[in-house]
Image (tube, rainbow, N blue to C red; front, top):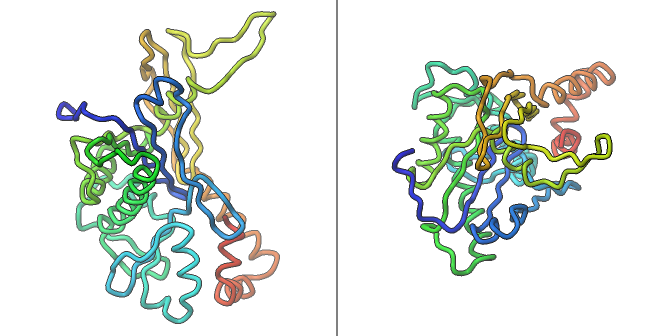
Length: 289
């Protein structure tokens, strides 16, 4: 962190999630005038429009990157018999959770059991998000160059140092300079964001002003893969202090998806659902979007 470059005019953040991923950016000048002036991309998948896209990635039989997000889901569903030759990964971020012996040759299994190096999969996804973000920045700010950007990559607070370092190395492999990058804990990023949200309440006729210095509060971050619970204290100068170690577990929203899938199988039968997946893969994916 001591080598972190302080020469930047834009902050670009990538949220690489278990279920959904996205990005946002803002200039330093815009932040000073209005911290909530944040630029995000709207992604489209089927009938859904969202500020995030599905965390799915498709590689061809040569393990070359093809598509990410909703596009990867749609293209994979159109492949038919060619699916057997492709590599399609979905919900793979949680494979890093509690990997105490995570190495650079650690492999992931795609949905059909075929293996690829985890570093190649993660770095390809980050590279796509980075390049798509850069394109949006250059469209909005024609004066901007990549050297003007400080990058932020968010990770769950309950991840161990090995998993965090793996994400850092994947980002470097994706082309993000280490001296331009910060690894931020998701609940801490959420905490700073909440400070700028309009918030008012009345208590015995007095206005409620949140995040006063020395006030303590709990951050409950329920994501797709993990639930992070952090306890922070606001300090003078606008900073925060962690007063209790982040806790939580792999209790994210994907468990709801799995339970819903089992519920459908109980109603219609496993054979019917398997046939539906095979014959109408796009419609099946839409159900879980």
